[in-house]
Length: 137
Image (tube, rainbow, N blue to C red):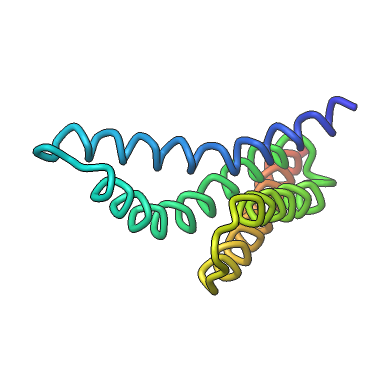
């Protein structure tokens, strides 16, 4: 049960952290822009989101997958796959429920999140195995 909650938290954070980063970027942009309008801020948010979403999402998913996997190297890759697919599924649910028009960027971004998660899980499993072996020797 504890592991399941950890995985759910990692999925939620994997989707939530890039959104919070985008909000922070838009707030800072609005603070430094002279007399921003709703239209200009909306256009900036859309443009920034096209960069922050894919790259921030992949980075967050990578880090969270490594974090989840490093404590249990035997299931690190499986847990990372769960995190990556979970973050991607949550992203697709958000896209669908907000009636956002489909773009190929979404598919590429979600594939990148899954790949980043698997890399993070593999590194966690490999790093933890090296630490365990060196402690035994």
